[in-house]
Image 1: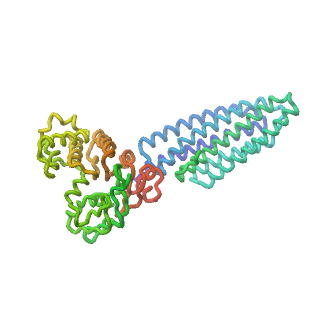
Image 2 (image 1 turned 60 degrees about the horizontal axis):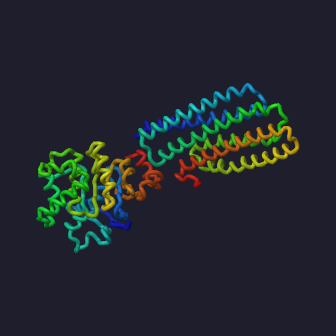
Image 3 (image 1 turned 30 degrees about the vertical axis):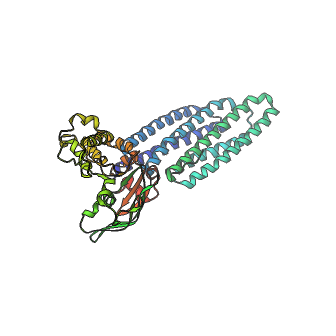
Length: 214
Length: 251
């Protein structure tokens, strides 16, 4: 009865998975550059950022077409409106990754502090992004709740890193600039965690109809 | 707003066939209630029960309680004509009488004993104004109503219903035979009328229910499956059958 509509919704899901995969890829690349100092990868990051922007346009167009043609209600309406909100967060994740990439040349080959914590934080935030997209695809409220819960872990990393960097600035004021750059990187990862949390909250809305207050 | 119509444990049979099963619903006054559901689910039957139009069909049996303004509409003391004056009806197909526009509107009031030309003039003008058609017909009140367009005829029928000063207006798919412009005029009119009247409308147009109604009742196979605020029912329905119907998975 609604096979055309179901096909369009399946396409929307596929595009969302694609955009989620691009977000995971861009953060993984950023993490690799941060770990290995491989500057070659930086160009790829800019290309990926542009692809994410393009994907956002494509999904936006598809959602508007679905709203116009199908006049969705109930679960369909929630899924499409959630997708429209989620792509804004995904696009911001891409932007934050690019922002990190811009800072990396200033911190590689410098006396890096808080390194291991920063890598752990990066991995935790990538994990949140992956799981938030998986939750959307699988209509998985439990997984979405886990992502929302995990945001505290990433926030704690940020606090710890900040403490370490403050101590470092006091100890070696001449390396202050590098410490500030590292703090900004940590802040961007913390923001990525926030965006993943937003995505997870929209997943919860899409499935249950209830969006977290405030 | 307090509930103007209260229905409790209502069942309706057409002969052996049970068309409505244990309906419980309270309808608030001065609001628009949409009745939705697939064809044959009982929504029009339910609508017609509210002004006892089903009395006219042989073999119909109704049990349970239907109260209008807290009074049992089947009580022996109820004057059916008076009940139908208070609870008017507008049908799917515009059905003006084959007479002048003026006489169409004056028909009801005349039946109820108003003879004064001056009084009738006032009623005709007010009813046509309230039904948002006065400006289109004021210069041709003596012309035959059948010469009006479908959309105008339907607004004329609404004006005719308003002329006897009802409290409730039942509408059975009032726009399904109309073009989008006429449809939108009737919808706007309904939203305006709810300031003074209670409107209960059967519609197959989901978007219409979403646009204009305050609460929606979903009927399926003679049962009231779900009833609640329109916004809630169409965004987060609580029953799986409601979700399946409004998203087009069956029906």
